Image (tube, rainbow, N blue to C red; front, side, top):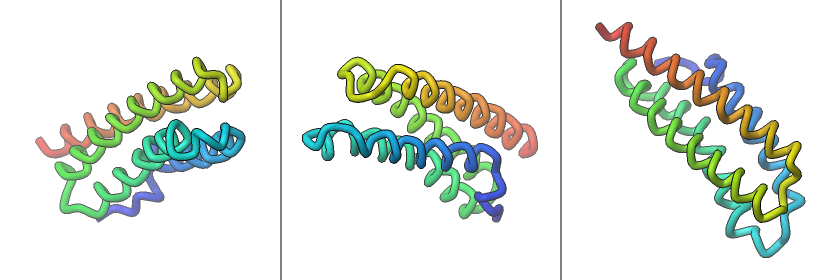
Length: 120
């Protein structure tokens, strides 16, 4: 079992989640249970899946949860695009958040490959 807080990808995912929460505070109230909630859930799911994978038994399980976290990161990217196109999100915020999400996806890919290589 590994401490998820030591994973650099988890640290970046957590930082991104905090940024998404800060930015979505300014979204329209009618989006509270719509786009705001979707963005927050998708983003927080990345770190939550990494934490759960670290609490499971072995690298194979962690690799599986990295894949699930990757799906959440992709979902986040779509919701960020939607927020940009619907205009509650500033283009500069969109650019920064999507770049952070892309970096997390690259890190998840690397971690998953390392975990699978270590299993061989």
